[in-house]
Structure formats: structure tokens, C-alpha cells
Image (cartoon, rainbow, N blue to C red; front, side):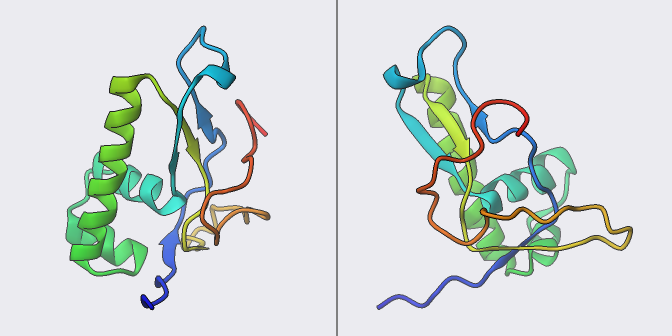
Length: 125
């Protein structure tokens, strides 16, 4: 039996958790689920321009684990863009962390889990 995942620290609560190609009904689309930890890794590395080591420190995981999370997030995102799939952001072994300035809100109903729920739908919740 595999070891349980260590919760990853997430400092960002996304307002939009579902993305899809314009003009295509949702029922006709395949969907990929991007975990909250994967989105956080992409945010830190690609938007904040942090190194894998810094991403690992922020998420309370090793540099190697941060690299694996980031690689999987980029793979899923690229596949969705290339194939025209929808992207749902939810789930993952995460813990919500407040920054020093306290800028994060708790996200009830999301967090730990494997991304099997319906999410918050389109646009703002």
C-alpha cells in the first residue's frame, strides 16, 4: 500500500475553477482535473517566477516533489489546450495557508480529496 500524500501548502484560492473552449457544449468535451496543488505549483513557478526549490519551500514539500507536481500540471494543461478539453481545478492533498498579511480565505468543501466533485461551475462562485 502506498504511503499517504503529505498535504501541500496552498496560499491561493482560485475564484474560477472551470475552463473550457468557447462555443462547445460541456457535454461534448473531455475534461482533465488539475489539483489545487498543481495550480499552486504553476502559479508559483510560472507566474511568480520562483525556482523549484523555492516552490518546494512555499508548498512544504521537497524540491523534487515540487518538480514532479509542476511537470504533471504542465502536462495536463498542455493536453487540454492541444486537444480542446475542459479543465476543472479541484482536489488534491492540500492545506490552506495564510500569508503573513493574512490574505487567503478558507475554501470549504474543497481541499483534501481526489477531484471527484462537481466544483463550483463556471466563472465566479
